Length: 70
Image (tube, rainbow, N blue to C red; front, side, top):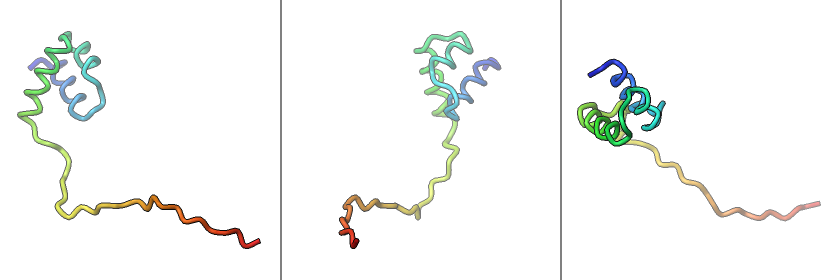
């Protein structure tokens, strides 16, 4: 893989660039970049940690109306 293509893939993978910007960097068409990036993602796993015991936060959308005591 060419160095400019590798740079573009890494920037796409960490969401610092968008597809047209990365394609322009390595002189590929948008479609070629999408195909190449799809293959790159298939070979590289996610970089985040998924916790099994993640906490789900909820919002209380009901607003309670309080009377002004003055």
